[in-house]
Length: 461
Image (cartoon, rainbow, N blue to C red):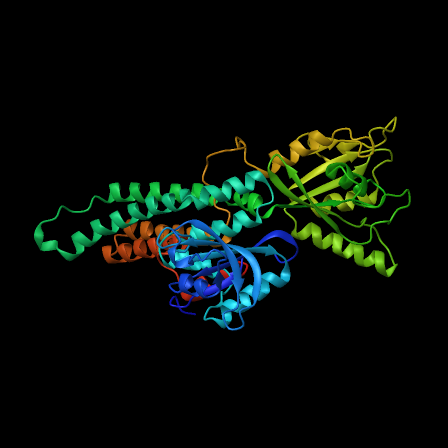
């Protein structure tokens, strides 16, 4: 891969649509587009002003064959997505015109863009930093308006600004150490360790606030994985249908209907919930049901939230108690179903479940479903979180790990000062902390990590 290449890719999903876009970026993109542009009015694409559309045809200069009627959008550097010359060819949105146009560009000197290469060039050319580049894919993948807003907040540079602010403080501490270490004969005032330690404590506190926001950020970015579990015929599939407000799962009066995990997404006040209806947990010798139970148990282990459902029309039995013990150490909501049946026999006190953890519903009638949604939202997000909050969140595990390593280096630097070790050790550890934070914005990043990040992008972005 070379930044000197002119790259091309289809930037819209393949399939049938009104418009499909083939994107070019690189120093030869305008001249290359000129070769495949034909105007019925004698216009030249090279004369087009930046950020304007020019009507014409995509044609093969070797054969003179017209491929498609199109609008050519010319955007000249540096005010473009990649800070390079860009041409976007707006074709008809069918597979053939898009592929034929792309093949024609390859024949005339372009090469296929790597996954995420347009955004990677935006990063390498200094238009955005690495955390902003990662926000692009978060916006593309966002499942709710709130998730999109949080990703856009990162794309605007709010996280970068916070990280840079913390890095500046660390670098300022390094400068104080360096001045004293390098020029002791200049009579520089002895470092006040108390002030230094306080400054380091302030930096660590700021990092800890960011680190604590990870779960919330991840939930908005990836969605909360929630498993509905319980013994057969307690209303798991009915609950899934009630939450989704559609008949997503088959419901019958016979136990063991659900044999596999059924998944769907639910939007709760902007919080995306990946909800899984699992097979009823019970002893079984039937192979399909036995495999379903195994998958249910695996879902309990891997999910963020367990929604344990119990039938209040019958007394608690050993199966209920077993499920309770399986999930008692997980983040869980205990759902008592079938309250529409008179004279409930279920005694919640038998499992020592608090009111804060439980909600009483009728999945069949829809009673208590709104209360359940509110409980899910409040359980997954910290107290005081408000929709449209301007709080800076980290949602990427790479960012969280960089912050953890930076915090560890600060802890070791702090420990070194308390032990009166040579100041060079603390200075080295502070630089290490700054380097760890630099991985978030991309000021200190290896080529391997960079390639891994952009490999997650689709071709054309």
